[in-house]
Amino acid sequence: MLIAGEASGDRLAAGLVTALRDEWWRKHAVADQNLQPLHKGFGPVFFGAGGDAMRAARVEIVEDMTRHAVIGLSDVLKKVGDFARLMRDLADLAERRMPDVIICVDFGGFNLRFASEIRKRVKRRAGPFNTWAPKIVQFVSPQVWGSRPRRALRMERDLDLLISLYPFEREWFARRAPRLRVAFVGHPLAEKTPETGRVTGAAGGPPLVALLPGSRTGELRRHLPVMLAATRLMQQTQACRFSLVVPSEALAAEARRQVAGDPVEVRCGGLREVLALATLAISKTGTIATELALHGVPAVTLYKTSWPTYVIGRRIVKVKWLSMPNILADEELFPEFVQGAATPEAIAHAAVGLLRDESRRRQLSQRLQQTVAALHNPDANGEAARAVLDLFQA
Figure 1 (spheres, one colour):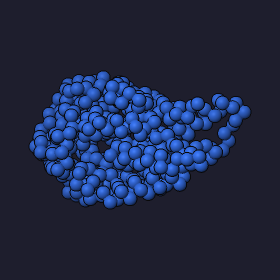
Figure 2 (figure 1 turned 45 degrees about the vertical axis):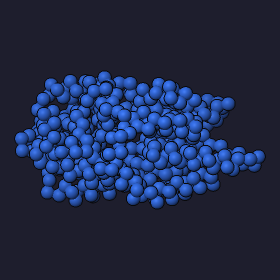
Figure 3 (figure 1 turned 180 degrees about the horizontal axis):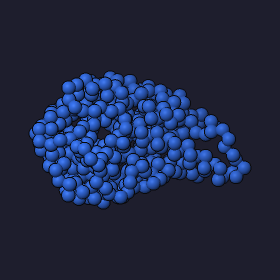
Figure 4 (figure 1 turned 90 degrees about the vertical axis):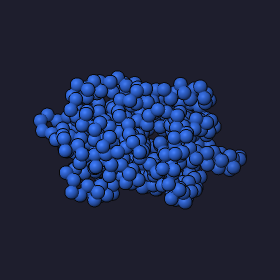
């Protein structure tokens, strides 16, 4: 059973499912040389909550979780009833179908609670005729090292395995939750990106700027108006083209409505193709910033949320930056503009400065490559799959 709650997690889950299926067959073929898996239908069965990428990977989707992605406290409060129902329904489903392993993909706010709920239910029904005891895996660590570090103790109690994408996390958990099994595999996104630094951008014509407001409706609502205002300011002093990329057609339709009248191309999917041609990106912080760094694309980043969420976040967040490349490098590689600082003027000024300074972009691209070098693993999904299967070794 897999649970992925947003577009990035859906893609990660799909890659892991494919690797798990391949590793399962490879393992059984080695164990029995006479076994010839002529019909792949006899392999592992996958079901759960996710989106289109998991569905394409032949996962039985019982709930499209990507439509429940939220941003900020106000959005969570609006959907608290929906999340309570989802928690109950998915836990009930797990009890009925009794999967051998439950893989929670990213979406830490929901998935850590789900893992605790499953542990409670397993304990409650334990007995001589009820021996269901699934392994519980968290794929992508919640950023407990950035805020509320005591959650590591809950993870130690409830998880059988944490699959980590970032090298510093294993040492961090070893100090604070030593009984938690942690497997660092690198970032699956790095499997398909080059390991050599490069300055991106199409030859000839105005530079292309990628606009990446986020994969949630709330992010589009808060980030896109600021981005569009910044593009209008940029065009006053700098010739450039703009390509806005979102992961779903529903978001693309909303983006087209907001973009009407602006010279901005709106694309549903095709992020890698856009990044291959982009000179610069204006992006939200988060997973996408890591993908930009892996592609060597310089970026100006921003993040806006509701004021209650921002006020609470300032009290509990312990890291200096929100963009993972900045955290990994311990310096501001990507200029960050958060909440009130995320103005069209500030973003446009930073973006135009990078567009006009090729030497600075080249140096930044090289620095990004050095920063994310540890994330490159051509078999990250394979290592993650083997770590899951190793849980069932005698």
